[in-house]
Image (tube, one colour):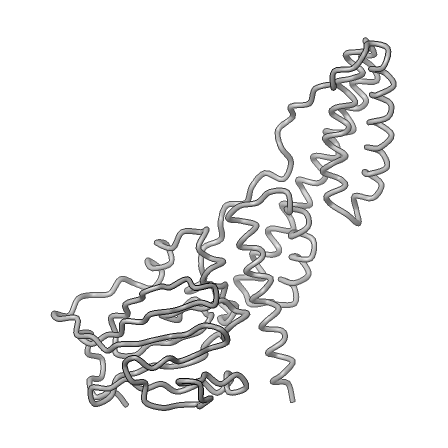
Length: 296
């Protein structure tokens, strides 16, 4: 369909305007480009806004054209406010997908240059940016999937101290911390954050028992903390392994099941990994919803 098939000298310059006013400039050094949430799309949008492959853009006879992919026809793009499945995309015209406005310009890139392999592009993407581009579950193999950020430690290193209280209050405080820790440990199979809080409480209880010159009670509280820490760390590791396997092998239902535990389990550890979990959850939800809409 392109007037210059395979010609790497032609390309597109996209301007992306988000609902919050943010703008991006994206240069694509090919005469075809996909817009969508999948990791292989040249212009990637969050999965809650776009299908995995939403719109194909191509150059033909010196003009830019677009066509909506079949599985995105339920959410048509709008060209200058008019919903349409395909058409000529003039410079200065806005193509709207969800609440994102897109503008395009056909550019000449001069001498052809070799493009890096697809995996090299993903290596260059910072892990923190995964939430901005969305996470693709569109392929049943690992090829082209964004990298998984390094997971943080679940429980902080031991650094417990007994609060400053009168000496006669130390054993009382130790016993109270121990009581609350035991209650939270009981709830931990159903609420992982309670287990994490219980570890800290056991350790404070141990510190207060030591300050009260009750070393045996302190050792017992430390043992409780260490056992619970090991149990939660093992569960955390196994769930991460199952999630990563499901992610790489396109098992969306399994992804959702593991995320239902991992997201609350890691809610106290904000960073690249928890942002990746949140993005993956949105992508999996979008895919399951799309699967439901397209089911016969």
